[in-house]
Length: 69
Image 1 (cartoon, rainbow, N blue to C red):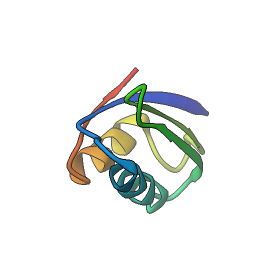
Image 2 (image 1 turned 90 degrees about the vertical axis):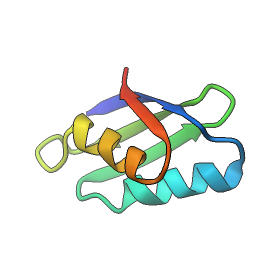
Image 3 (image 1 turned 30 degrees about the vertical axis):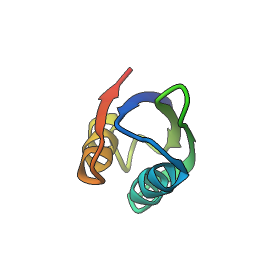
């Protein structure tokens, strides 16, 4: 499954890397693409292992505001 997330609060590539590393630490994540300028991210994942809500929660844990789009 592929899902887009709105991610607020990122200001640099270090922020992007922190979000990507956080998401990739979850089981079932296949691909992560974060766009700093658009303030969003697209995540491809196995929905039998992780939910969009769990991904949004992980982004929030890294210090940013996330919403499932």
